[in-house]
Length: 194
Picture 1: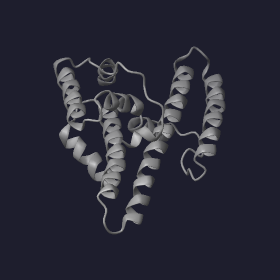
Picture 2: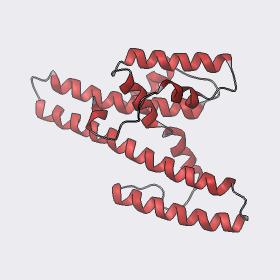
Picture 3: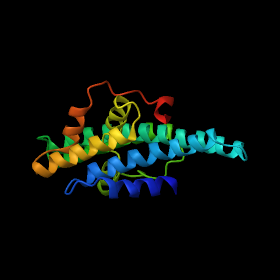
Picture 4: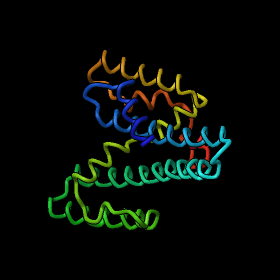
C-alpha cells in the first residue's frame, strides 16, 4: 500500500505528456525506493513493535533489490528481442529465435525468482507491460545517488526533464536523464535502501 500511494503521488508531482514509459518507470522507481525508506525510517524511530518494523524495513529493502534485478533482466530480454524483431530475418526465423531468447532469459529469471508466476509463455503484451514499468530503473538510481539521496534535488531534475520535453516534443526523457547522470550506474546492493 505504501508503494502504491507513493507511486500515485509521484504522478501528480511529475508527469510528462506522451511519455508513459518514462512516467511509469519513474513512479515505479520512486515508489519502491520510497517504500524501503519509509519502513527504514519507521524502524529507526521505533519504540514499540520494533521487531515488526525491522522486518518490514528488511523486506522493503529486499523488494527494492529484487525489483532492480528483475528490471535489469527484463531490459536485457527486451533488448535482445528488439534486435531480433528489427533485424532482416524472415518472420519464421524471428519467431524461432524469439522462443530461444525467451526460454534462456526466463529460465534465469525463474532461478532468481522461483515464485514468479508471470512469463510462463512468450506474450508480447506481458513483456510490453513489464517494459512500461521497468525501463532504466538503475539510471534513476544513479541520478538519485549522484544527488546524494536528495528527493528535492531528484524531483527538481525530473521537473527539468519535463520542462525540456515540453519545449521540444521530440526530446526523449530517458536520453535527458542519461545526460544528467555522469557517474557510473551503481551495483544492485544494500546501498539501494538508503
